[in-house]
Structure formats: C-alpha cells, structure tokens
Image (cartoon, rainbow, N blue to C red; front, side, top):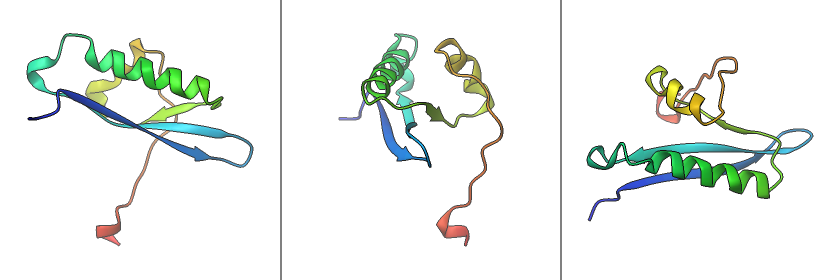
Length: 87
C-alpha cells in the first residue's frame, strides 16, 4: 500500500515565541483535485493555532505558490539551505 497523502509539522522556537513549520505535503497524483492537500494544510493550521504558535512557515516551489496563497500563506523573504551531504 502507498499513502494517498501525508504532511508533517515541526515545532521550533525563536527568541520570543514558538512557531511551526509545515513540511513534506504530498498527495498521490491519482488523488489530486479532491481537496486532500487543502484539508491537510487546514488541519495543520488548526494544530498551530491550538499550540499558540505565533506563525506557521513552509517552503515550496514557485509552482505551488498559488495553492498556498489560497490557504492564507504569503511570500516572505528568501529561504536558503545547505544539506549535510554537501558540507
């Protein structure tokens, strides 16, 4: 069996408050268009609100910006990364 959809939420802390980061939102191709990704994001937003996180962040490709924009997210600055295998 393969998962139909999945997502994860990680909790982190800054100097003054806690926030959450959404990661790895995936919906299998044959199940896209049924609102599953939206339902995952809405549930993760509810968890963030219940945990009193001051913000929820995520990284996405340019092609996913319209999707996340419809769910209340907006562009903020630029994300950069370095991976341990490249150090």
